Structures are given as C-alpha cells and as structure tokens.
Amino acid sequence: MTGDADAIARYDLTLDRFLRYHPDVVELATEVATAARPVPMASALYAYLHLMGTDADDRGPAVDAYRALTTSAGIDRERAHADAIGDWLAGDWHGAANTLDELLARWPTDVLALMFGHQLDFFLGDAQRLRDRPLRTLAVLDHPHAGFVRGMAAFGLEESGQYDAALDTGLAAVAAHPDDVWAIHAVVHTHEMRGAVDEGIRFLRSDDTAWEAGNLFTVHNWWHMALYELEAGRPDRALAIYDTEIHHAGSAGIPIEMLDASALLWRLLLDGVDTGDRFAVLADAWAPKVAAAPWYAFNDLHATMALAGADRRAEAGAVVDRLTAYLATATGSNARFTAAVGLPACRAVVAFVEDDHDEVVELLQPIRRTLNVFGGSHAQRDALQRTLLESALRAGRYELAVALTDERLGGRETSVYSWLQRSRARRGLGDLDGAESATAAAAAHRSRFAAA
Image 1 (cartoon, rainbow, N blue to C red):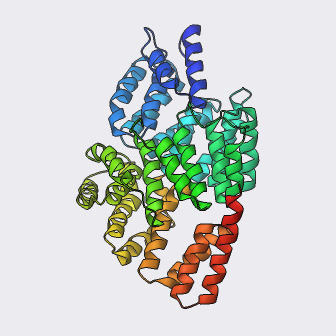
Image 2: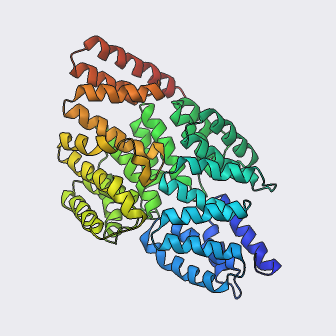
Image 3: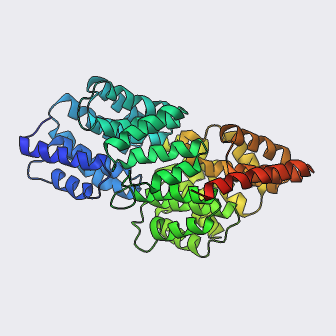
C-alpha cells in the first residue's frame, strides 16, 4: 500500500480496532483519514466505516473520503477499493460486492476488503458469499488477524445452515480472541438456529467472552440475549435489557441499533406483551430517518414497525406511499430490495396493526422464502415469519398455521414459540388433544431454558 511506515502503522492499528469493533475506531479512523498526508487506504477505511452504518446521513463523509481516495490512489489495489466505494455510493451495492470479490481474488489477504465485503454480503442476504469469502482468505492468511477471519467464516457457515461447522469455527475464534464480538455473535446465532437457547444463555454469561460493554456491537449481542429470554418465558427480562442496553436516552440513534429495538418490540407486540410507551419513544427516533430519500429497505421496514407499533398509522402509511413513489423511477440495489421485499413487508406491517390479517397473509406468503434478498440474518428476518404466522392464526387460517409451525419445528424441535403457536392452530381446528400435547411440549422446553 502507498504511504510511509508511520502512517501505515496507524492504519494497521485502526484496522485492528475495527476487527474488534472497539469504539475508538471512529476517532482513529478520523485521525488517519485527516492526517497531513493520509494514506489512500485510510481514506478507504473511513469511507467504508460510514457506509457500513446504512444511514443516508453518513453518505456525505463517505463521499469526501472517496474523493480523497480517487485522487491519492497510487496502485491497483487502492484503485479497486475506490471502484467498490464508488459503486456503493452510487447505490450499486451488488456491484460493490462483486468488485470486492474480484479484489480479493487478486489480494486474498486484504482484510479491509474482506471485512467490508462480508458486511455487504450481510446487507444483501448472500449466505454463500458470507461463508466463502472468509474461508478463501483463511486458506492463505498467516497473520494474527486470522482469528477474526475465522469468526467471519463462522457466521457465514451458520447462515448457510452448516451449524456444526459454524459452532466449532466460532468457538475457535472466540478462544483466540475473547473480545471478537462478531465471532461471539456467530456462536449466538448458531445456538439460536439449533434451538439451544439454554446453551446460548450460558455462553453469553460465561467468563470466556468479553462482549457486554465497550464495543460497537454491544447492542446487537444484547438483542440476542433478549431473544433468548423471550424464548425462556421471561419477557420482563427482555424488556429490562431493552431499557438498559438496546434503546434509552443515551442511545446513539443510528439505524443499525434502532432496528434491533424495533425488532424486539415487534416480537413483543406479536406475543401480546405490554411494552408501555417504548414504541412511541422509538418512533420519535426513527421519524427523521424516514423523511430522507430511501437508501436501505431493511431500515425502512424497521422504521415502519416502530411507527405502526406506536399507532402512528398515518406516518407508517406515509412510508409505504414514499416507497411506492420511489419505485416508480428508482434503479439500483435498494430499488430491488424494496420491490422484492421491503414494500410488501412494510404494507404487511401496516395491515397487521389495522387487523387486516388476510391482507398480511396475502402480502407475506408469496415472499416468505425469499426474504433474504433484502438483507439481514435468519434471526432478524424471523420477525416477518412470525408476523405471517400470527396473522394466519388471527385470520382463522389454521391449516396454514399448522403447516408453518410444522416447518419451524422441523428445524428447531425445541422452539417454545413454535409449540405454542401449534397449540393455538390445533385448537382452532378442533384438535384439543393435539393442542394439549403441543402446550405440554412448550412447557417442557421452557422449563429447561428457564433453568439456564
């Protein structure tokens, strides 16, 4: 890379902090990007850092860094980063991901390209590339950062359904770096997908990990703990986590954290849990974000959940209207996200709070197998799967509800939530014995989880 030894050392330190999601990465990235003679790769890191937040408000600083990079890039690798950032800023998220794939084919140990390619794969819901990018780099990387790459591979393996390999790989990454919060997150996802809620709770509470505070990924891992608490039948604990860790007066107010808040409150709403005025407070935080031009449909959905949950139906409907108008002329990746999933999902959320449950089913059933195309993880997208199931039950479409619970229990036989929904569906069909059996299964698993 271009630059003197001291500047490159500062860049390396910043990259190391970024791999750990250490909060001082923001200050360090600003320092290296605004130095008297910034190295081109520092400008690239700074631009990626702002793009990763998926907040339209952050595009300005990213554009400034991109311009600095395009004028200072001295070698092909730096120019390739400029091409990827340019694609992303232009709204071609898929093109940026492809450019980073080509870059990594030439320079497979470029951890910056890997990290942001991995994030793009997450935003695009591309499970195969989430898995394959880091596995390719692991094959050739001989460096202390290999442990962090292993954590990325663990998440890709989990999203690809390779749970045994994901758990082994993730635990190895955490053993190498107990503060590798991305690897911790991969292990947590794996336990959830396997239905091992008690193991997930014990893992997060163990002394072998360092994730609870002091990093940029704290909120998301606390969100996972709250999901475990819900499955264990402790919504009061989930709400306590929400208040202290997920959304409160000191929260940053950034979409990547607020969507966790929306997703948790929406699950509680589906379960009939009283959340007080929390939706109203969260809707206030989202309102300025939805006033901007559409940038990432995954955020639009979670903003709509907050507004609808707060019974601000006119504002939630306005998001739907804005997205509908946007699709009339928009091109690029977000237009694809919005058309395929974002807009029908937002419409379904509004229909849900309006008690139009047949409409929710009609909107979500056709897209339920392709939700990944607008990003997020299996765990995050499950909020929409639960919305479909809840509306099927409320609409009296019990045969569909039974089919949906059969699918869920086929993958996670220990799911308390799924057993409870099966009980409701069986009762709706008049199968009282089946309902009682499902209720008993839910109670047995919940008792096991509550002991964790």
